[in-house]
Image 1 (spheres, rainbow, N blue to C red):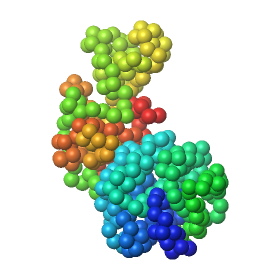
Image 2 (tube, rainbow, N blue to C red; image 1 turned 120 degrees about the vertical axis):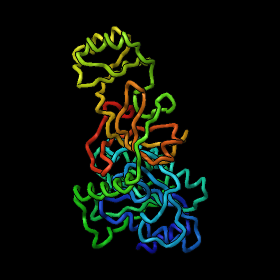
Image 3 (spheres, helix red, strand yellow; image 1 turned 30 degrees about the vertical axis):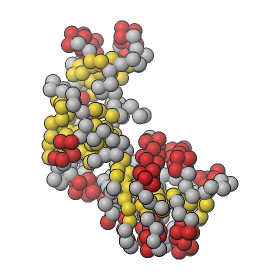
Image 4 (tube, helix red, strand yellow; image 1 turned 60 degrees about the horizontal axis):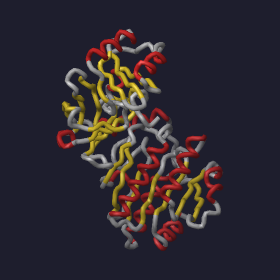
Length: 352
């Protein structure tokens, strides 16, 4: 059945999306399809959209790579381009993950790929799983959709598209003998990949006047004067390290968890509809993407902390990517350089 699916993809090339629950054999199938089509003379690219268990590039990213021969595993491929998602799961980030998958697919087309195989996450249930799969279907408009199932667990996702003439749906049984990994095992595998990625990284101080911050409220408004920041500190009962006012909100960073009982007063005093308060610790140990004026990232790093008095960011990253970076994309995963995950930050980000 895999052979027949590969032959159809070779004969009618285009975008092929793979759906399946965790540990059903999607990645193995992706390698098989890619190898067959390459051997038959097609130009083939793979988009790895499984942000939690990335094989092409580090976790938290969507990577795209070309295949130039027979491959047994996708982790042998080197990414041609990467898109930063910033967390180890697409849940809560469905629009970001779908957008990144679309951008990487379009990049593969621009570079001449005839066959583009999109390996997706195991997010196949619940409202968020439905939303993610729907967004990817609408954005990618695949010619082929291959569903790997143990039983009928994907039918609620497949049935809405059963009459779509532009997409051929193929149902395959899961790969026999695939062992289901526990959540702790998956976390350990990510930790090892992060640890290897950051093994040679160094600390760099980046001037926030010279670098753009994306996906955060920080540096999107006009900074408050020192005397206004002092007054705000008195109202909040804690030191305000940074504050700025934008058209729609007042954003402040404090050195401890601030009381939110006076937010209604602050809305009136500053003429804004929203108040966003963040703790300085939210900016510590944060996964970030580094890029040079592009939607594609050059590298990932760890934002260790922001030096508020100096308006600088202390970032752990490779030297070349840190020196050339003009944009810093903030993620929501917090972690150490050893790859140990410390949880999720949300209050400083703008896509929630």
